[in-house]
Image (tube, rainbow, N blue to C red; front, side, top):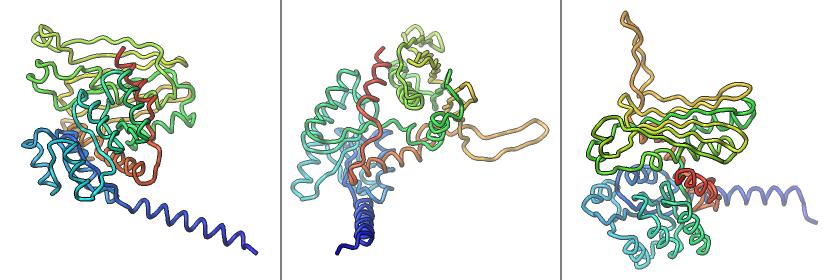
Length: 346
């Protein structure tokens, strides 16, 4: 006679033990790219006990050498070289983190997928919605994960705003205002040499986030840009822009973008509804405040996005570990990446 409660208890214990073992296992992950995002990803991966950072890949080995030496890991000049090395040393790679310029994503994603490696890539997956769909199809054909990073979803303040809006705490969302002020201000050389398109480079995270919060799609978008001085204007460089997005259920969203927040990294969101308003404010460098006869004196906002979203980047890599080790679905789907790109393409 089977003791049903005891059998169920044993199955529950086995499930918990198996899940615990999966979470305690380590996934071997490569970082491709040794620029600013490569450094951020390597730090987060190295600090995660469930991940073994097993190498850096960069065609510019001179630039990448300090990063590989910092974490005492191998340096490879190509993804192919890293894969061959893992095969010969019988140290299989589980996944790759692609932190390289967008134009390089397609070839790297394709190569990784063909070698059955799950992929985390910086946003955007590719430069157009059409190319993005094609890359997701390639990964689906190879049965590997393609995970795109939109770090707002992993930040505790943004998550709190999401739950406030979706619990009905502000009623029906009518309008939202988002401000993105980059800091430090990019060099004049970077801007004059083309830099990155301010809308495609700076809007994607916030477009993804507000779609997620509203659980709705953009039906129309209008954008206008301006240059902050004559030299930029003469070279057709736009360093400030405003986007107005209309969502299908009627919410109007204004997104203001600037390269020139010289007072610190400025990233704010307000969602206004029929019953109230939900807000994400900036975070200062520290919590001190000086009050004297000249007024109240507070520290500047955090220096830049690596500081503001440091915890979110760590959570993002932990979620990637869940996908690699436990098969947990990545929360940002193909549709999300495609819809964000369509807004930027427009």
